[in-house]
Length: 274
Ligand SMILES: Nc1ncnc2c1ncn2[C@@H]1O[C@H](COP(=O)(O)OP(=O)(O)OP(=O)(O)O)[C@@H](O)[C@H]1O
Image (cartoon, rainbow, N blue to C red; front, side):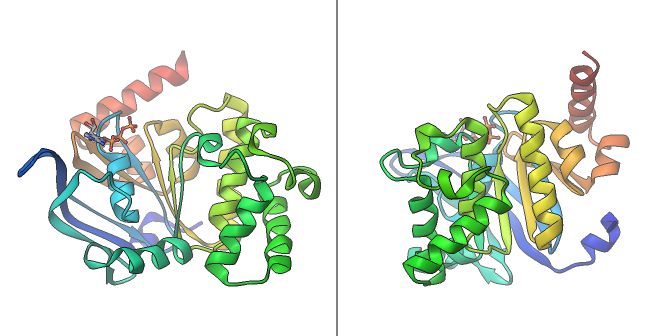
C-alpha cells in the first residue's frame, strides 16, 4: 500500500491556492463564503474533503469544475489542474477539461439523470461527445462500463429509464457516466448520502475497487468520517469556508491536531458506538 508520504511526494493533479469567493446577492457587494482555501490533490491519491453542512465543500468542488452558481464571484486565488489555471479558462476550455479530464458524481443520482432518455443512451451520448467514437462503439463501451460498475444484466438494463433504477443502481449508472470519459480526476460529492446503509457500503467498495483498477486520482467530498476511513488516504478538513487541517487519514483520525477536527472525530466515534 502507498503511504501518505509516498503520495504527497507525487505532483499535484489539483492545486487550490488561496481560493476565496462569495455570493453577489446585491450588485457590487459579495457576501464571502470561501476564505483562502488552500490544498492539493496529489496524483494517484484518494483525497477526502470533510466538514459539516455549510462548510463550503460543495462550493469548492463546483468551483473546480467551473460550475459554481451564477452569483458566485471569485475574490482571490487560483485553481490549477495538471499545471493549467482553471480560473483563467474560458467556458469552452473548461468544457473540454470537464468532459475529458475531470468528472464529477453528485449526490442523488436519479435527479441528475434525464427521465426521458434510457440510461444507456445518456451514458453513450457522453461517450460520443467526449471520446468522439461512433454510435456503435459508444454502445459497446457503455455496456462495458455498466459491467465494470456491477450493474447486473447490463445489456437489458441499459435500455431502461432512470425511474426503473433503484437509488443504488442509479448511482452506479452515474459512476459509469463519469468513468466513460476515462477522467484522470474523479470528484465524488457525497456519492452515497441518501442511500441505504448496505447499498452505501456496496457503492463505496465499488469506488475503492475501481480506483485500485484504474489508478485514477479521486477527491471525495463527505460529512462522514466513517466513509473517509474506508476509502481515502488524505484528508482536508473544512469549516466555515476555511481549511482547518490537512493530513494523512491515520493522522486525522488517530491524532487530530485542530480542535474542530478533534470534535468531528469524537462525534463520528459516538455515531459508530451507538
Ligand atoms: N446559490 C447560493 N447562494 C447563496 N449562498 C449559497 C449558495 N450555495 C451555497 N451557499 C452558501 O455557501 C456556504 C457553503 O455551501 P456548500 O454547499 O459549499 O457547503 P457544504 O459544505 O457542501 O454543505 P452541504 O454538505 O450541506 O452541501 C453555505 O453557507 C451556503 O449557505
